[in-house]
Amino acid sequence: MTHTRTLFGTMPNGDEIFKYTLVNTQGASFNIINYGAIVQSLMVPDRNGQLADVVLGCDTLDGYLHNNPYLGAIVGRYGNRIHNGKFELNGQSIQLAQNDGAQHLHGGPVGFDKKVWELEPFETDQGTGVLAKLESPDGEENYPGAVQLEVRIMLTNNNELQFDYIGTSDQTTLLNPTHHSYFNLSGNLGSSIENHTLQINASAYTPVDSALIPLGPIEEVDNTPMDFRAPTRIGDNLAKENDQLRHGGGIDHNFVLNDYQPSQRRKVAYLAEATSGRTMEVVTDQPGLQIYTGNNLNGAVIGKENIAYGHRCGICLEAQHYPDSPNRPEFPSTVLSPNETYRQFTAYRFGAI
Image (cartoon, rainbow, N blue to C red; front, side):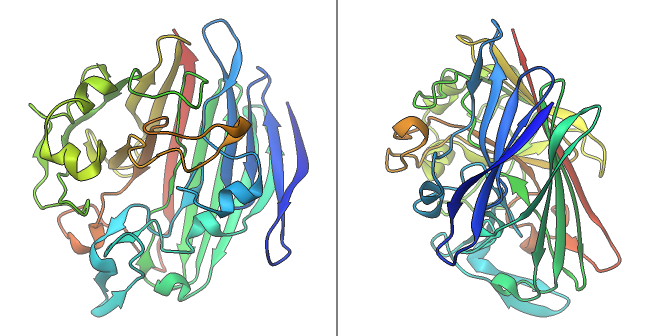
């Protein structure tokens, strides 16, 4: 196992951004930068042992600073959307920024994805990684409470990329961070993910309105394009006529994961790409999985090796709580009190067939 650090770029205010390269005993590796705790690349083997990068990203810091759709970042304080940016907490009405139409998205205009994190590399018998630390002061993006967040990000020697979160706050607040990589298991980052096969351990989902805010009751996936209970070619479901697909321009929906119990880890999803043979399993203790099929990618983002990231060339599998949970008391709560500790574990386990 090895790790190295190189200068990746300099922020407009002079802050230096470093890239850490972590290599496990199998030769698989990932790069992470201290801007947004962004996973800039992830090299994993295909069925023949050939390594290729399977996450969308940029070769320069400038690429992340402009027109960046959260590529590879940790987002928060609140991953996903809050309706009109409003919620009630401890009897007080709180108004957040409306940075996605009328909605609040992924923590606001300057969320965790746009912060400079502290990264500390480490190596253990299990793998290699970084401990990512961030302090979010009271009132940042109008969220109450000073939040301390640590995320232990490790690539194990079994090619599992793990995110182990722990967070605290000095006041009652919301906390619902998630990891936002766009995966393409083919290793050809300019190609569509529609030929990937997806399976999700979810019998229900949260239908949304045209602003991608949950309509109300949770619904079964039966007879909908959200039915991935069996391995299904993604493009087959995307081709169906359905109002929910029209709202998101494809899939941009929260799946209500089966067998949820707080702190209990279980396998919730499986992704595979036939040409390379690469597979990815998602393991988490979260109640929801937001699937986003890269519907808004349109070639405007120029990524690694000068690739223009076009429509549906990446898929996000974001383990988190449901969208608009602060306004939905029937959903699992995202409220964090000062006497509590936020914990989340999510891992992406890579293999080949």
